[in-house]
Length: 181
Image (cartoon, rainbow, N blue to C red; front, side):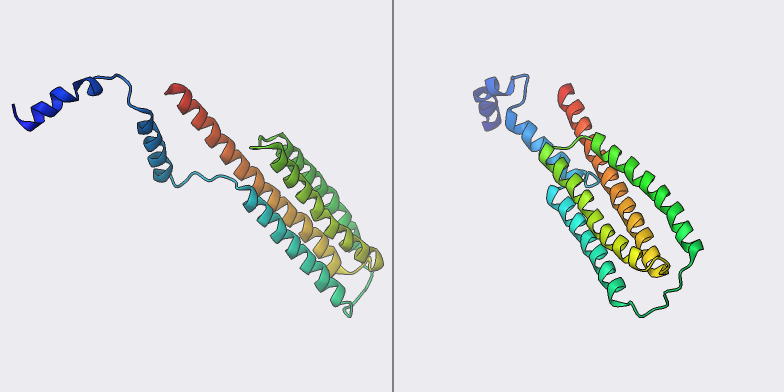
């Protein structure tokens, strides 16, 4: 008998099992995760960083507007009316996105609560802009800043919704694959 035959006879019982050992499945899952770079998970820390970045951008907008009060302050009723229409539109859009985010599944309730609080905190900068708007109702820079606030908030909310849907889709696919195995 050669070495290979001796090896086969010696380890025959271990090779005839129907199921591979548990380590095999762990190695297989690790290889799958490495092989599929398209999968993106929303990291709680990443979400907070995005919210903080937006808060900084909005705060800097408020500071810029407050520091440049020397511009022309002609009250333009048409601009104010257009702002009111835009406000109604964007408020409805933000409310819809907020409801969509509230309905999506999160890894933990704490993450969901923190994210929703961060979105609400974005409105503190909006309130500062509103104070400036009340002080200077016809200032087009303030009106543009208010509208830009809504646009940025919608973009952030859309990005959050997209990432949460990707994570939920990926999670559901993993659950389905595990149940098949």
